[in-house]
Length: 297
Figure 1 (cartoon, rainbow, N blue to C red):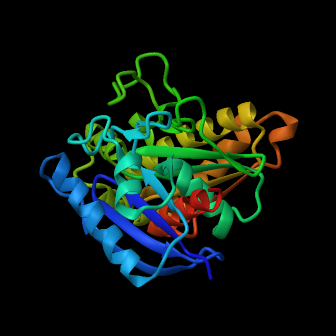
Figure 2 (cartoon, helix red, strand yellow):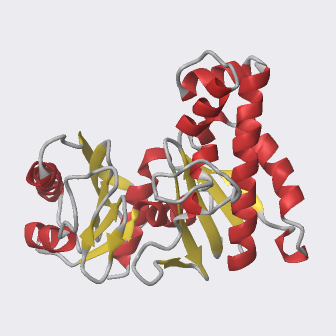
């Protein structure tokens, strides 16, 4: 049985897995992302790689990383890991594992994982979205991962949904869907309207209990996500959008108003079959997608 190594690098945790040809994780381990310098973060990755390789041989490595990434240079500069600026992740992983390496953005790998083994099984034109502390995404087009020119295609969190005076975004623009639909953005808006809670979990609990302001915050976020899906769907002729992340775990609080709003935004005939479903793989989607990248080497 030929195994592949999968690496998922984010601002909170670093995970490494051995994945079999059916997309099943046969070994998985993770460490918190260190707060130290660039080398401290690398040591965590290297430690997990060594541990995984002691569990069995692998044919190749797929790396899912927060971005921006640079496919041509094999480097990453994650916004949520500021210690890594143009960090040569492909070179380092190849030297440590002595295996061929393929790099992809974390949103792309989430989409690819869901398309291979999750809610998007066999969908040919798929958008994967993560709605959590930020909003990210990735595209599978014509059954294949779509990297774009630099490897950063699918950054749907920065689709502009409020062009006239929208809130400033961490990307340097304003009015991005991330400024409306991320967990912190919904909390910030609700608090500005007089809601007294402090975090996204409390907002979800309040909405589930029928709090009008909390429900309006979810409705506002859901409409922004729906506008984004309709826009990307029109450009890419999608058949499916899969949504994961912490905010998506709220279930009907998000998906109810989202699907209703999508019916308003997706008016073109070829978009009427566009479906929106919750992700199935949870925190392992990036690892499964990274293994799918490795399968292509």
